[in-house]
Each structure stands twice: as C-alpha cells, then as structure tokens.
Length: 124
Image 1 (cartoon, rainbow, N blue to C red):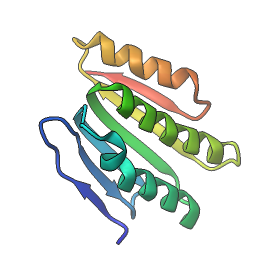
Image 2: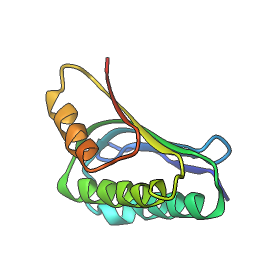
Image 3: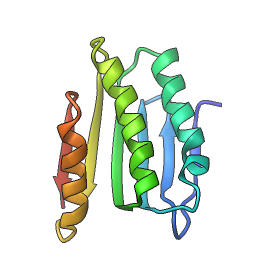
C-alpha cells in the first residue's frame, strides 16, 4: 500500500502520504506519548518513497507544536531527505504557520539551517 493516512488525535497530527504526487502532509500538534510508535509508518513511507521512486518529494507541514521526541523524528526525516538531495534528487519542505505563532516559525528556521534543499517557511 503506497498511500498513508494517520488520523489526527488531540496529541498527534493528521498525516497523509500521497505517493502518486510525492507529497507528505502533516497538520496539527505533535506531542504523542510515543513519537517513535506514531511516526514509524511515516519514516518507513518516506524511506520507501525515496528508494523506490525517482520522483520529487515535498513535505507540506502545518505543524503547530512539536515535543522533543517529535522534533527528533522530524530531524531524522530531514536528514534522509538531505542525503538524497546530495545526489541531485529533488526534495523540498513547505512549512505553513500562523503568523501569531512565532515559536513554530523559529523552530522551522532552526530546521531550515541544517538543510540545503528548498525549505520554505510560509506565514499566513
């Protein structure tokens, strides 16, 4: 199964992987009790997509809050994207945030500093 759908909860984001279009969407808060359990399917989906296709991959994020373990998982995903970007594979991030939430904008900026692939932070 190439599509990915994880419904949001009070403490976890909605996550949708669109294999055909090469887009991974995440929207909401991320402070689950066990981030690695929640994100294991997401990390596996990204890894499989990057290994089995040559298509571009875009992460479209509207994450409002991330706890420390969620940040670590995001770093792992971005590291994998960075690795394939170094081989001229097109990957990118579009991080949408509410302009009233400076904290998430600062977090996105910190992630962006470690990435050489296109990483847009879009206030709205």
